[in-house]
Length: 169
Image (cartoon, rainbow, N blue to C red):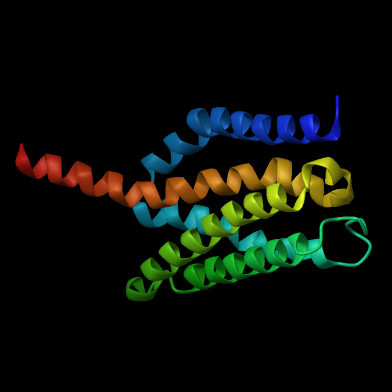
């Protein structure tokens, strides 16, 4: 198999595995929590995105990684992580907490989408071995992050829909 096939297969299977896990273990637990506690759990996971700065740490990724991929990925993760930490710090100030929850989810999801776009247009799959140890971040951690961004944005909409249905019955 070529590096492109392996990389794409890893990426797809990373999503499949996390979707299966999420459907059975994570989503039912988040739905059972209060909305604040569910958002707190998701923000806690995303607060570790400062780790994305490893993409620009000399010696961690290879020298042949496409120029322009690593800095955007690193700083997008860093910004998302800081926003998630700010959300956690303001949990008692709901007027700050909720905008920060929306913000870290939008910034984080956009970061991932743009990273995928950069990866594809800059030719990352053929040289994916240049990711070095960060390969695991892309294949294992990023699918979970994207899935939890979607869940985080979905949960408040779901709760509003349930309240609306209950009020009309």
